[in-house]
Image (tube, rainbow, N blue to C red):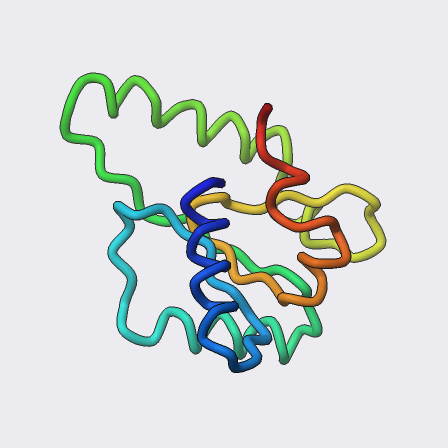
Length: 116
């Protein structure tokens, strides 16, 4: 969260409006059109936030041990359920999220969600 906050602060310092923010883990390799595809989806579906579950590399034994955690999360929060706008709860894949800037500000910003 700290690194993402720093990135947002750097963008703010550029002096031009930014409608969408890509919040992503540093170790994710995105296709060249990933950001434009996420923004297009957010606009077409009128979403404040869209996310993607990335393909996880599992080479080491520790990586292979942690992959089931992600599978368990998807079972707790099935994609069809969390994507239903009539549900009060939602979920997103934290490693790759495109968020509408105004919605993030309205929700209290990143610091509201950071662990203390």
